[in-house]
Each structure stands twice: as C-alpha cells, then as structure tokens.
Length: 238
Length: 268
Image (cartoon, rainbow over all chains, first blue to last red; front, side):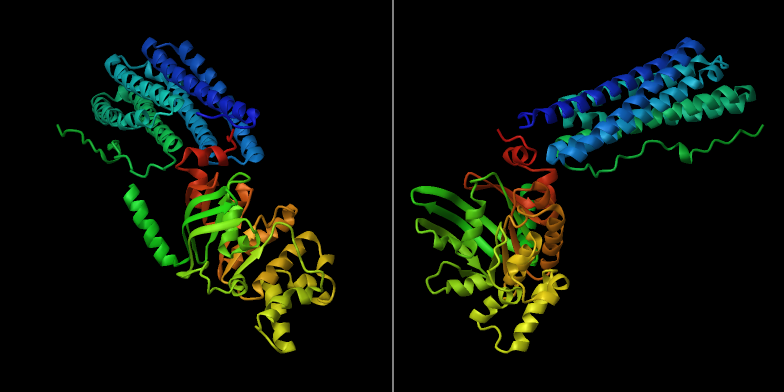
C-alpha cells in the first residue's frame, strides 16, 4: 500500500490481518511437509505431531475471523481495504481446510504403512510436494500483491490432477491384483484425493489474490483435471 | 472489458437511461479563484448521482450550477455547457424561476418557511400558478407529503408551524416542498448531515423511492451514504472530477489512486 490511512490504528489492524494470513499460510505449508515426512518415514509418531499441530491453524482461523468482523463493524472499509478484509476471511477458511487435509493424511499413515509398495507412497508424497510449492508461491503472491504470480500458480494445478488420475488407475490395478492391498491402497487413494483437493484450494487462493489485486472476480472456470469420477477399470477375465 | 468497451457501454447506457443533464467543460470562478476547472458529467433520469470529495473540492459549486444558484453570488462566473434536456440552462432567455421549479433543491439544514406545514407546501405551486382552487391545493399538499413520507405524521396538524416539526420531519417537509412544484430533478446538498440515524434512514429510503420519478443529485460527505443511495458516483478533487462511474465499482474497485485514497481514508 503506497499511502497510509489518516487513522494509524487502521493501518496496524490491516497489517495484523495480513501477517496472520501469512502465518497461517506458513503453518499450512509446514503441515503438508509434515504429513509427507510421516508418510516417507513411515512414522506414526511424526504423524501424531501433525495431527496435534492442526489446532494452531484452527485457532488462527478463528482469530482472523474475529479481527476481520471487528474491522468491518468499526471501519466500514471501502475499495482495497474492503477487498483485503473479504479476502482474508476467505483465505483463512481455505487455509484451515488445507490443514484439515494434511491432518487427514497423517491419520492414515499407520494404515498406509501396511503396504510394502513404497514407490506409490512416494508418488503421493511427490504430489503433495508440488502442492506445497504451489501454496508457498501463492502466499508469496499474496504478500507481494502479485496477480501474475498468482495466475502462474493457478495454471500449475493441472499436473497435480494428472498425477492423481494416473495414481487412481494404478491403485485400482493393485487392488484388483491383490486383495490384501485393498486396505492400504484405499487409504492411499484417500490421501491422494486429499492432496488433489488441496491443489484445488490453492487455485482458489490464487483467484482470491487476483481479486485482491485487480478488484475483478476471475470468472474463467479452470478446466477440471480430475477425471477419476468417470474412470472405470474392469478386471481381466481369466 | 477493455477501455473502448467500457466507453461504448457507458455511451449506450446513457442513451438507454436518457441523460437529463449533460454538462461539459464547466468552469466556475469566484472572482479570480477557479473553483471548478472544466467538469464533464452526465446526470441520468431515474438515477441517483452522488457527488463526493473533500471540503472545497467543488462538488457543491457544481451542484449549484445545475439550477443557477450560483447566480446569487455576485463574484461567481460560470462557463461551459450545461444542458437540461438538451437546452442551455445559462441561455439568456431562460427564466431562472421556472428553471428552479424544474430543478428543485434541498439544503443541508432543513429550512422550512416560518409558516404552517400547509403553506410551506403550497407556496411554490401558488407562485407558479400550478393550482387555483382550494381542492387542487389540498390535493397537492396531500400527494407531496405522501411522496415525502410525511403525510401520516402531520395530516392532523397541517396548520401547525413547519418549524415545530422535528429535524428529520422538517427535512422531509423541505423535500415535500420541492416535490410540490413537480420538478424533474432534485438537487440535495448534504440533506442528512443535520439528522439523526433514524431520520437519515427515512430520508435515504425516500431518495430511493423518488428515484422512480426524478433524476437526483446528492452531495454527501458520508461515503457510506453515497454507496447506499446512489447508482453513480463522481469523485471531485480540487475543482476536477477525478473519477466517475458506477457506484459499486467506485467503492469496491476505484480506478484512480486519488479516489482510492479518499474513500479509504488515506488522504494526507
């Protein structure tokens, strides 16, 4: 923001809101990394840490909501300020949701440890790393008020969807081959779906940053890359 | 939309809404001081146009050009074109009294005449010869007060003094008085600044209803009021229009930095 408000406390409140969002974003990133770490290390203990750390995200979301409502009530914000506050409200609830997905992946670690097919666990982890990087970049875009950067992140969800599509088919194949793999593979499938959803949420964050900077709602609908809703694999007859 | 598309759309909107006042290159001088430095603005029928800006920005000066209230200031000189339905308001043949009947005005402080409620309303119609019989005058009083949302509160005491009413009622009486001469445009110069929130809400609701039949121009210092009551907003600064357009756009996504700074409270 080039100019300060006449009322300095207003600037301080907006600054607090921005830094709370940045803090939440950082935590959400850490949670994704933690869930992947627990998957890779096959560590139930590490997973438990991730589950417990989710509370901090929930608390921050509530704090941001309270602050935003208070600013709306007291300042009647306009223009960029109004967009800033509406964006913070929406972003905090999305970041909280992203945190929930990480927590859910962490909860599945013990069940996923049943599989000895580590390659496919790695694929889910790689997918999550992609999303984590997207999240980091969209938060940078938010802090720098950079709509171009946000749009770049928006475009990057397609490879995540592609990974998910191929993983979906692969997991179905394993499950058809070996009934004992059904439990860990189903949990992996949910974990992969969680990552795919996180990717979608990151694109929503990118849209919010675009709105925040440009004041226009992005109405182009992103092509949906997740085709698994229509995927059917039939067991070979032998 | 591209800039060309926006311009095209604005032009088409203007034609569809039919422009009531078309003003171009309006300059106002008070002696040597240039208070308005070439203002271009259209006022549309059935719309509320809000003029906002810091004190001394020229918004009231502009408003007062529309019904030649600036004529009453000796040192004031107005140039540029101000067309009401295509006819020059500053043409020498224009009868200023007639003009002010077509373009009514409501001021910041309620200023009812020190006469009865009834006489406040019939004063205008009487001097303009809009009615002759008692029945006709009664009818004008009733419809004007009804349109101003005041009828039910005063119908049993039309003979009491206009100044005996509360501030909010007095302001609605002034609006009723402006309506009584069947104007086409109503100019309001901070009509709610002396009113409490309830009276303000009543007047704002009234403005919204009046929009059905009139073109309304309102000068206000309350950004929230401009956002609530108007369809179009023009932001004045140091005698110029910095930006004007759709009210929603001005208050959510102003294009000019000066507009943003003003409406968000960043003006240094």
